[in-house]
Length: 344
Ligand SMILES: [Zn+2]
Ligand SMILES: [Zn+2]
Ligand SMILES: [Zn+2]
Image (cartoon, rainbow, N blue to C red; front, side, top):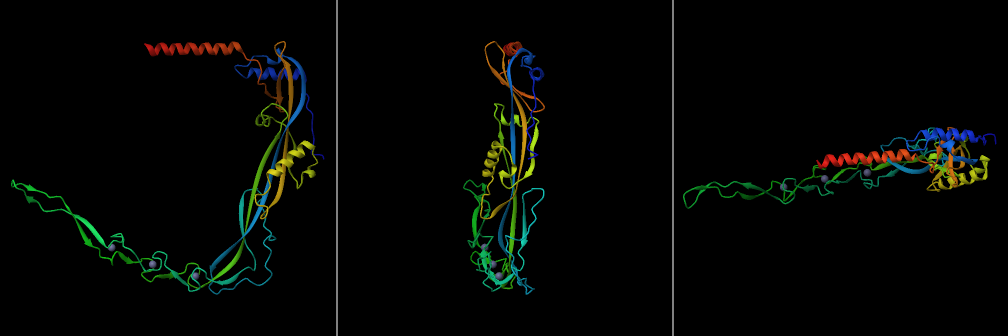
């Protein structure tokens, strides 16, 4: 297929030296002119591929909605549509969203189950008793208050104040109970479900939830960390390409296996109610050049130049030992000065 291209970028030894020289200048502890000081044994060209899969799901469920029935017209004539077939436009921005649609012709009238059709139900505040515990006496029927006592003369003839007394009084309520403020002692209230009508209108509501899932996998044959390699600039092998099965993408075996692995991770949680609306794949290819080099006479090390913007990953690159030593000595001198200041 036309979109699947694998451009090969070239990297000569001279190019690689230039890139590594520039890289070694940008770190304080890196030995300068790294590229010029190594013996390049070979450069092999590979690539890292970042595969992003985006799956949009649709989940449908039915909900019953009950409202008070006041005798109005009811939409119950005609074939009731299959809720799975009612067209609902998915969001174009791929946002997670819930849409509710009334199922046409699904209305019917039923007796109110909350009040058994009576229109009135037991008051919830007093549980249908008509009375509640008194707030003043907390249901005890008694109130107590502290009363100061008049001063008395003691044996020496001095005035003293005896400690105050707690006095219990009968509360003005009826044995700890007062009339319920919600039903005013009527024990029943107008049923809120049917607004006192005894009947409710029931209709079916279709609840459609749109959600999306993003999964990423990286095919990286090198030691460059995956997240680092993906930062390199590259080319888009596939960009936001919709597909229904991996075979449709006409890609090589590695990519096909990766896409199949991602598809396995994006199966809907509940296959009975969810279905996949769309799948979209994006593949970015970042070129990587693996440079095998020797720095001292005998060893064999590897560095990687990756991305068309030529980033470098060289974990075993030589250090600027002179600078490392200088910083170490400066640290020791600093600590010595601090110690001197503290002891004087
Ligand atoms: Zn009371
Ligand atoms: Zn009540
Ligand atoms: Zn009711």
